[in-house]
Amino acid sequence: MLKFSFPELSDRKWLSPILSASGKLGSEWAFGTLFIWKNTYYSKICRVDGCTLLCFSGPRHTYNMPLCENESRLPEMIDLMIEDATEKGHPFQLWGATEDQMEKLKRFFPGRFLYSLDRDGSDYLYKSEDLIRLAGRKFHGKRNHISQFERKYDWSYEDLCQENLEDCRLIAKQWCKTHGCRDQDGFASEPCAIDRALDHFEGLHLAGGLIRVSGEPVAFTIGEEINPKAYLLHFEKALDGYDGLYAVINHEYAARHLEQYELINREEDMGIEGLRKAKLSYHPALLLNRYRVTLAEKNGDAET
Image (cartoon, rainbow, N blue to C red; front, side, top):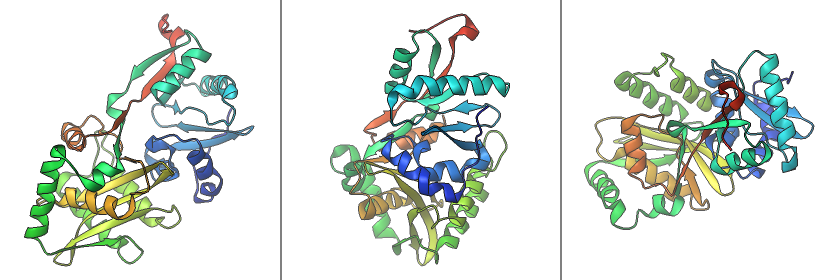
């Protein structure tokens, strides 16, 4: 049986370089994601003979693709995870496989697995140049929203630091009062994740920005580097009643800090219609499709 454990801050030192070197673009390959959501999704880590394994041990016990320097060890690690699931009494399932990874699994395990697309869990990735410059007709509406905000309000931007993190909590709490804090399962998971991110902001090497209007905090964003190619935005919150506020916090942080990255990951839409519409309105360069992988034998069928 594999020995998975919850990630601790001390694990960042050895795990972050491994996650970064993998070159993966999904939000779950940033250490901050594993740490700040561990009480919601029960994200756990395990080291086995030079390979790193991830799992989510909540109501639906789920594994991620193994991280191994030598790709030839992928079949061995997959077999270990299947054995681990059996010993723990869970049906084996692997979540988050990209299309390229799915093809590798088909090559290594022809006919052994079934694959289903999880559109709601697919990440939106944008060219940093697009979010910074907002050039061309397709971003005309975004530029207008920003211009209107700048004309209408007495506003300022500042980078997040220990002195203004409490302002982010105030925004998050006020946002929750307006929109509700609980997800579809009845858990206040996002506010807890925001609190954890703010509590360990420096230890997690997070960064972010804050917008004030007439001196009052009204919007913030928090993110971290996935790898030298991609940056992840964990949270973006803006209070109601300020036209163009989301467009401003989005643009200001990207323009000031993200030019060195090729891609910006703004995570999934969770199947929420309004959120999907908002993410699509920024014209993603890539929708990182995610697949759920299960054993074909269970259904007496196979996909090759």
